[in-house]
Amino acid sequence: MLLGVDCSHWQGVIDWPKVKDAGIQFVYVKASEGSGFVDSRFAANWAGAKAVGLPRGAYHFWRRAYDGAAQAAHFLRTVGADVPELHYVVDVEDTAAPKDAAGNQASVDKMLGGLAGKKVMIYSARWYWEPWMGGTSKYSALPFWVADYRVVSAPLMSGWADWLIWQYTSSGSVPGISGGVDTNRAKDSLLGSTSGIPDVRPEINEAKRHLDEVVRTLYG
Image 1 (tube, one colour):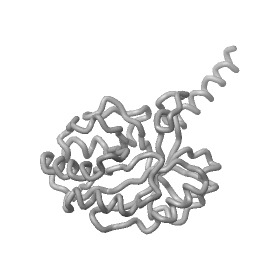
Image 2 (cartoon, rainbow, N blue to C red; image 1 turned 60 degrees about the horizontal axis):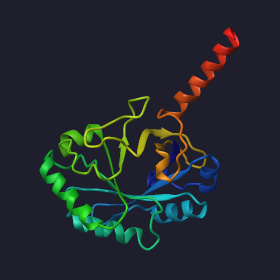
Image 3 (cartoon, helix red, strand yellow; image 1 turned 180 degrees about the horizontal axis):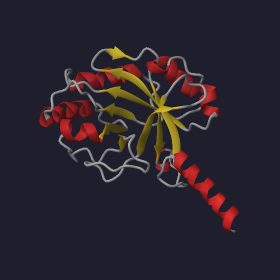
Image 4 (cartoon, rainbow, N blue to C red; image 1 turned 45 degrees about the vertical axis):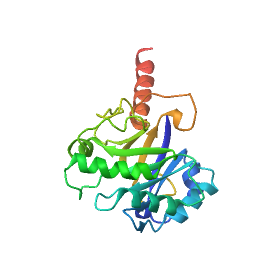
């Protein structure tokens, strides 16, 4: 498993060499939202992560109120010629959208159509996908990035047989980033590796190793 973060202007100025030295292995950076908003830290974060050699993906916060094709064009325009090493991510969690699964899917479809030919991933959460997107499996051919902070082992969600990235907390502590930051585990296939560790939160894994050592010390 791999350890990564996703960031936006909410994290302020990031010290990317410290982030890399802390063991972070990938990053997803907010680029845009709707049909006109550009994250104020996108350019700096995009360049900073690249400078230290972190593989990067970019994400766009989808808004139902705006045309999907226009959102795709805005996303691509914002990222520009310095394309991601990883994915263009469509972040599907707009709570201002009506709970109209057919209409929401149609809008997302238009955005995905505008990203044709790109390496695309969907981000969402169970609490959102069921009521707003109808739990659809129509996007199951795309890799999935799931947000779920309630479980101690990797979650599954309707619509996909598995996930590629799991955002397991919004309050991770990473040197070089002030305050809490979204922290993620990813399958090794994200970077083309085949080595792995169990699908559990890193702190749970560490606690188990410590307990095993105590048991061995006490009981041989």
